[in-house]
Length: 349
Ligand SMILES: Nc1ncnc2c1ncn2[C@@H]1O[C@H](COP(=O)(O)OP(=O)(O)O)[C@@H](O)[C@H]1O
Ligand SMILES: [Mg+2]
View 1 (cartoon, rainbow, N blue to C red):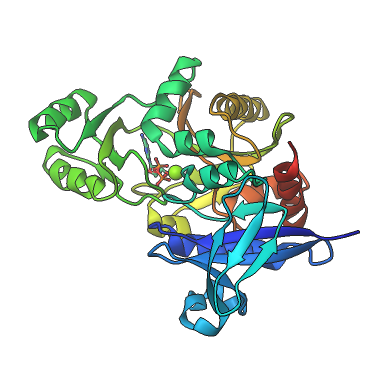
View 2: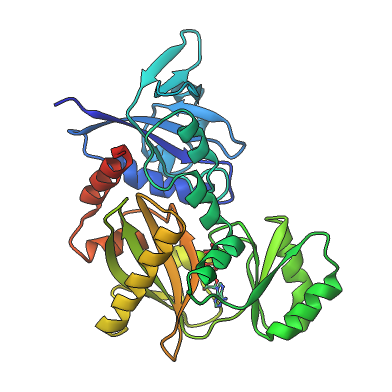
């Protein structure tokens, strides 16, 4: 049997560059070498595409792009159906491949841009396509769609850079404190503040505008956040529902990657019946946004057992101990099997 050639993209011109390196290291070290051969393409923080053929550990420790010996400028051929990686240098080479696996988080990777390039070139893709990726990246528009299919979303409002601060303040008063200020499109909690009182609002607004031209003011939802891993193109598989237990503040960047004062419970400490409600809601949202392949749907579960949509991560954190793989492990799918499923789904029409 000939091997499937998987082109793995890692890094990316995004604030979540480092997170991607960890996810990609896990993917690259777990793809079964008997079934797959891999082309490794790193995208630097500046957005330069490099074919990388050095040690995988250097991806994990972030030094992969320091040695030019292992890095060559490269590009995906945009020609429809060619499925080729062009590697530049003294001797230009073309490497054919079967499927593209972007292991990128946030802007310029999880937001539909790379997916658009793949679709343009007719390259099979692991994960969501252009529309679902960009929709899920845009928290405000994702909320509008969720509301349209009858799923509750936090009360909130979008503001542009041009809007007067007094208008933002007025809306904040209407929503009440505490509230959340966030960039419409970002991830890993970058640019997000939980605003406890009015005097913190200005700084929070500035902070969010550093990450996007549009920001979202959102009511703080009571209760806790739950996640649901969804897998599939047509027939959907859902993982166990997990729960984030916070002891203070919110799930910010530091907490996400150190879990200092927070804890992830998988399964979530909710009834079996409520877990099913969460999974069903996650599936509706997944289909509503047009997701395929995989995504992690994040929701709030309130003290009165309401399910409120937060966001969908179309390329969720993907180290072997990340939430998505854990939720899938909970239904008996180990990390290697999960990767196989993802590649197969990517290759499916
Ligand atoms: N409306 C809200 N109510 C309560 N907590 C929130 C709300 N919005 C965000 N949070 C908290 O902030 C974290 C990050 O926000 P989120 O919208 O998920 O952005 P990101 O895409 O960066 O993960 C969430 O995991 C949650 O802890
Ligand atoms: Mg989140």
